[in-house]
Image 1 (cartoon, rainbow, N blue to C red):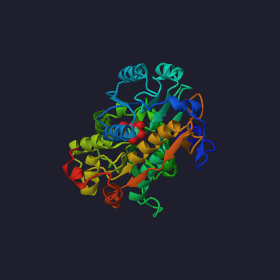
Image 2: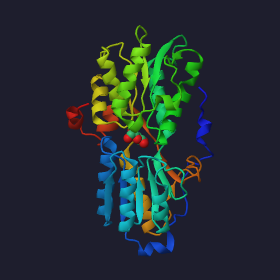
Image 3: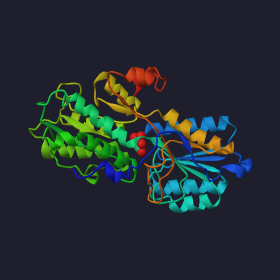
Image 4: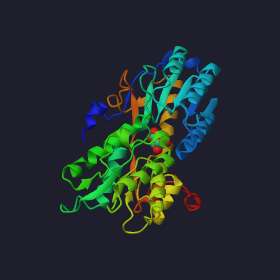
Length: 367
Ligand code: BGC
């Protein structure tokens, strides 16, 4: 394992909330109407649908005009949609990028027109034109996933536990979050791989070899099937580090197809992210993955909305991190929230009691 947290350019990020001047803040705000373009990546990952609607409802509730588009996971479609928003005269753009490097020219045009650009959840790279970044501590997401594996394998309590066989999956390479998730997981498992108590049997430890293009569960299912065929004829597989629930369900399908029985003692521990209803059902009923990472997207949307309203009020948006997220041009002023690990012990309290998911939604979910 050669990758390290340092590669992520972690700086001396302060945690205290601070304000930095927004490009459109100040005197100009008098002319602003709050017209906002929301550009979301796709609809097959549940969270973007929930957030798109939440952002739209709340911004419209404040009396602002809103354009909301989903890009069908296609970078070119997203550029076209953002271009149409800029042409329509939006003053704010809230963007969760499909491909973090494909937006430079449309954002340059938006910036020329004085649009405030907020990178939503996913950092936008290689452009000076991003004003703010709102997200979760993405490295910590990977840490929480790895800690679930470590805890469920009993590696911490018992120095003699192991060796265990583990495989690693990561997200789409065009999403800069993927690297943060992956390194958080890898760094946390490193002590045990070094001690020989965790074996990555396939030896696929490079991000590129573990990546899942488009965050597509079917792509992950295929890779898992191949890994089982190539390396797990007689070897047991004990755990899979998976970055996202849709990928986790693809992995579960591959395992079930290979006669692993979800819920049985020898079914691997499998992580996830996003608390999608179908995955929460699997966690609850022990029919698939064993963990997910919950990121309260209502809070994330609220932060983005508060940035818009701050600028509308002539104030500077609040940020709490100035030194972690370098997009190739600058450290983008960011507001980061904390992710929460969810398993069978706390899913109800964290997801149902908080009103994030209705129990019926979980009951009715299909994987
Ligand atoms: C998000 C995750 C999500 C993934 C797939 C990432 O950028 O941070 O929450 O699971 O995209 O949609």
